[in-house]
Image (cartoon, rainbow, N blue to C red; front, top):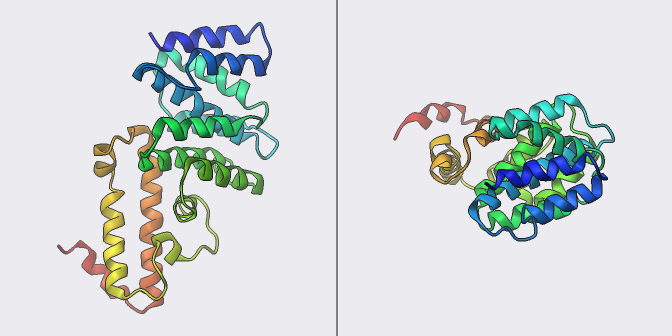
Length: 243
């Protein structure tokens, strides 16, 4: 069974160094080219765990609350939870090599943009667990987003769900400030439809990632309402429930 690779690799870490242990993970799990669907799933898990753990160290201190936030977001079989925790503990000792894990996630997900965004949302949950997004965490996440092949607009849209700053609501909706009221309304409805939990599940987004999608949807709605307020069209909001 593919999860046996994880068990064996974690057991090996108790007798060796961190760097050699993670290299063992990459080799035994097929991190550099998984061969079967089961191994691909484990390789994906390892890559995401390592990314989240190393992100928690980006500000210099990996906190227990960040590890707890990750466990709430990313589900693994109960029998493997101790092994995943051990991997998280090992990977959180430094940020070295995170680019390789981000690249692996990008390869495993290929053109599955929604899943890539879900991974980024999971990382933002961890980063914001202590109530502060450190500039080094922000840079880490921006670089991971770039490696995943996400656009700057996609990154800002996800970020908006976790960070309150001066981002333009037009950027969140990916529309021009010169767009007509009709076009902005249509864009908003398209985003709501595509980010609805049922639509994401149909696209294959794992249930454990839906909490992040809900925050992104809330950010999209907040941006739309901000634009309506800015344009003196708040009454139009009542029409959003109409066909």
